[in-house]
Each structure stands twice: as C-alpha cells, then as structure tokens.
Amino acid sequence: MEDIDPLRDDILREVREAGSPEVLEAIRVSALGRRGRLTLLMRGLGELGPEARRVAGAALNAAKDEIAASLAEASDRLHRAALANRLAGERADVTLPVLPGPPSGCDTGRIHPISQTIDEIIAIFGEMGFVVAEGPHIEDDFYNFTALNIPPDHPARQEHDTFYLPPRVDGSRLVLRTHTSPVQIRTMLAQPPPLRIIVPGRTFRADHDSTHSPMFHQVEGLVIDRTTHMGHLKGCLIEFCRAFFDVEDLPVRFRPSYFPFTEPSAEVDIGCSRAGGELKIGHGGANGPQDWLEILGSGMVHPQVLRNCGIDPAEYQGFAFGMGIERVAMLKYGIPDLRTFYDSDLRWLRHYGFLPLDIPSPVRGALSGGAAA
Ligand code: PHE
Image: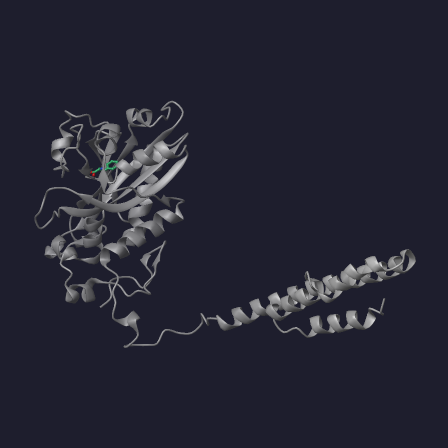
C-alpha cells in the first residue's frame, strides 16, 4: 500500500486552512465519509497480506484519529469565531445618551398617572418583600363573594353594584370582579403560606359620577404567616403611606370598620389640612386643624376565609388591605376629577402624565418628584 503520510498531511492542512464550518464539513466528508479518501484506503486493506495489512491498518487508524481530532478542534475554533463575530455585530452601546428634545419619541409620549401610581405602589411594597399577583377581570361568584365570606344573601352583595354576565346553563352568573380581593382566594388556593402579595388591577362597579367610574383600579395586599398580627398590618401600612406621599411624619389613623372577609377590620385615614380651601397632605399643624382622608380598607384575614382556602387559622394568620388607585393618584398629584383619567385627552395627559424615563423609586415615589410639567 502507498505511503499515507502525504495524504494525511494534505488533509490536516486543508483542515487548518478551512475558513467556515461548511468548508470543514466538506473536508470531513471527502476524508472520512463513505467514499472518503481515507475510507477507500481502509477498504483496500482486505487485498493485502496479513503482515502488510497489520502495518497499513495501524497507520491508517492513527491517521484517522489524528484527522478526527484536528476536525473537532477546528470545528470548535470556527464556532467560537462565528459566535464572537455575531456578538460583535449585535453589540449595542447602552451608554449612548437619549437625544435631547424632539424628535426623540421619549419626549412626546407620556406615562398615564394610573400606570405611574401602580408602579410606585409596586416599588414600595416590592421593597418590603411583596410580589405582584394577578387574576381575571371576569370572576366566578365563588372567588368574588362566597369564598370571601359573602354568602348569597349577604347585604354586602347589594352594596357592590355588581355587573353580572348573562346566566349560564346551570343558572349561575359570572361577574366583573367588584374588587381585587378574589385574587386573595386564588393565591391562597394555589400556593402554600407564607404569602406576601400585592395585586394591582381593574375592578368594576355599576356606579358613575365625578368620584365613581364603572371601571376603576385597586391594589390589594395580602400577607399570611405564622405570627402575623395587627401590629404588622399597622406598621406596613403606615410605612407605605409615608413613602407614597413622601411625608415623613404623615399622621396615619386606623378607624374600626367592617368587611365580611376581615376581622377585626380598619379603615385607614391619612392626615391633611384644608386651610384656605387648599387640600394639603400631612400635619394640620400651623396650617389649620387636623383633617382626615380615608384611603384604604384593611383588616386581619377572617378565619372563615382562611378555612375556605384550606389554611388552618390556628396555624396561620394574616392581614389584607385594598386601596383605590385613582383616589391616591388624585390626592398625590392634585388631579381634581376622576372622569378625566379615562377621557384620553392628550392635553390632560401632557399635563398630568410622566416622562417615560421618570422611574418610580421605592423610597420616594417618582425619582424626580411629581408630575411632568
Ligand atoms: N375589597 C375591599 C373593597 O373593595 C377592600 C379591602 C380589601 C378591605 C382587603 C379589607 C381587606 O372595598
């Protein structure tokens, strides 16, 4: 059999010089493929005598191993080079500054005050370890009412001015959720405690005037743990109110109240003054007598609600709260009429909206402090 060294050296050189994975594959096929140069020589071994076959066979196997190793090495090198090339091509310079002024889109678009307020609320509770949960707008009666300890004949059902969908075959009716509280139930049924969630979202009630809209937003909070008590509820909500309104000594008051799904229940008021006809959040102090504004409902989760979700009230307790987002947005940003939130009036949005880069921070609401001019 002819000397295979020159053939081996040729193939190794071709491999070294291959400039792409495709070329490399062609070389592999032409050397080691079914009709490859080395393969054909291997087939020829049968025609040799025993001794010659042994010598030539060993040499062919050694050459084959060497070529296979060099193919693997080259393939690795080519793939790494291709990746580096691609990354270099897709490189984005994140330090590039946004162009000042028009025509950059960042200057014309505005973040709606509802979105901004939701982001601020999430940032503050996120810092306290809450995670966001969501649920459907169309709810089953069970989640919106029954599991929340509001049985069919309960007067709270009438107070909710519920939008009902047409009856289903079995006579039951789905509802547009009247509050974000059904997500408490969904979460407790889906995940074991401890839990710490906030739930921003749309809610619906058949009510329409300057302070009510048939569609509005709430944010729900729920904490379930082994030793949760009213002190945690108070500490958490006082902290939230002060961070959200950016008033360090903001007076916060807990007023006994009633919700079927919490016991005890408390409504939360923040201090304000209305001296000179101007509403100011914070201490009445020298500006006039202390006045109060109700901003949220809260309470310790009712043991029956825990039981409805398979949680043993002797082992776990918790607190919950619900807050109207439009209301706190109006208070924080001095927006006088609820209905204007949904008018889609560009002049209004330019006035009350936020610059897209005005990122909400957990500590003080919007970083730049306040609505864009
Ligand atoms: N779901 C109540 C409402 O819409 C608010 C609330 C939530 C009260 C959680 C207590 C606890 O009015």
